[in-house]
Length: 130
Picture (cartoon, rainbow, N blue to C red):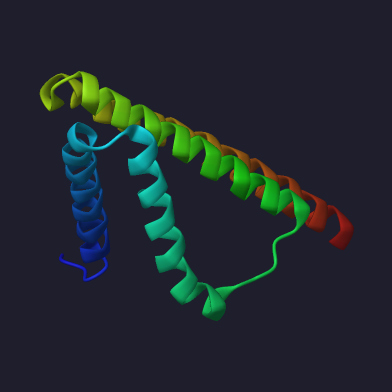
């Protein structure tokens, strides 16, 4: 059955495809540092429009995790720019399938960890009730 929520996945895939296409086109015209600067600037400006409505002050741990995520994402984008500068798109395409494998493994690991914590919590609660 069709769900309107599936359109969110289609929109996300479309945005990612446009992101890769624009990165490919810009990699032949601009320096990698220029591309990464404008990508980060546009992202920050767009996020600033919705941030006031959803802002929650992060803890130090959360702020550190967000900074690490941003740095890892930035390095990944920088690597993609360099790859598109030095190789045609067709040999690089199979590496996107590698991302599916990693996402599946991380999702499985995360769900196993969440389930183990949930079981531990539920077992502790049931022992206290007895």
